[in-house]
Image 1 (cartoon, one colour):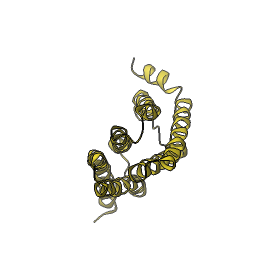
Image 2 (cartoon, rainbow, N blue to C red):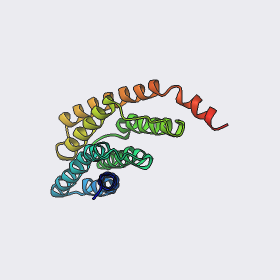
Image 3 (cartoon, rainbow, N blue to C red):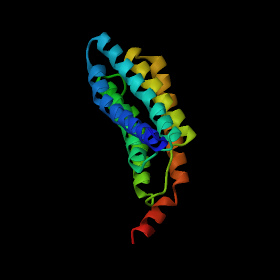
Length: 186
């Protein structure tokens, strides 16, 4: 196997992990919506494994120098399917109010819109704060699935603060992208 083949294989594994994370989102939501605690535990294990795959797929793509435009698009979409799907399941189960999820939804839609406006070939990579935000959201959701109450609500508040901060950071960093994208579409 040549070095090029090894890089290609790593890139394929990375994209496969992103697809797996996206597919895990509805399964986690269904398990977290179940009335019996063992299903919620199983859903949490699946959720944590899927969330951990986010770091692994990025490492595979970067270490193999096989990042692709498709992978750069799919990775954050898979994250959103997993996190927001799980969060919606917990809202529907009464663990949180919809108003508590609203800042997460707005941030994710705004960042996705910003990414759509960027000129072709220009990368809007995940910031360090976005990675911290993702970890906080994962912790808050896992805690809420297993131990609803003040502790999980506190984690949710921390995750929400980081969500808003990282969203503001993206908007500040990408403030010129809309103009650049419009100029490139003329």
